[in-house]
Length: 273
Image (tube, rainbow, N blue to C red; front, side, top):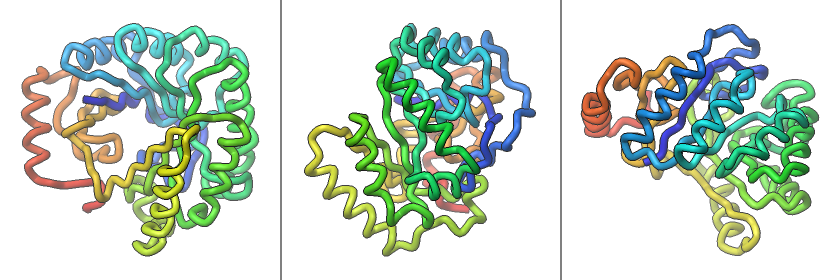
């Protein structure tokens, strides 16, 4: 089973399609690194074979490389980031950690990316990507399909080809957080069209590993994935922050597993209100 571990709810951006509704400033108090490490220990003892560190923006934490290093010594570990806070020194530190992947969000060319994520976000993300490439971090790009960028997805693909980036994760928009009340959700026919194009590309592409997550049709919440919130709350998926089943710092694992199974019997997903 895979787990997302959200180590902070803080973020330096305020993206229109943020599922966690993270604020565009640093204000929430994070769990100390020792607590995060204890969570990692619990996950590893209970058949979690891959941990993805996320937020908010995990690089708002000054101790994020310490956390990543600890997790990577325990199990397969990746991280998801907007890339804007990755300096040269950060990439150098990451190069000494055995990460399975570092996924950086890129939603399209500069104008569209900045519309979704804020002024100068694209420029800062490009710098982060460049630092990671220079230090040979196992880098991938994560793209969320929205009304703003769905006609420009192939421009992201061209970017990967030009920069020899070998992994691309494509997400359909989840109606959670700020995205829940936004205009960004695709119409069914639009989403079907772009997914058809992407699946055709995936069938032909040999150099880039393309993963397409159409969670509305293939939900893995609580069956293949779980998520730990910044305060230790367990949910079936990171895209279901309000579906709290237990708390990993307070409840025994048997209770957590039972609550997850109970939640699964309801058949609820993040696409349901």
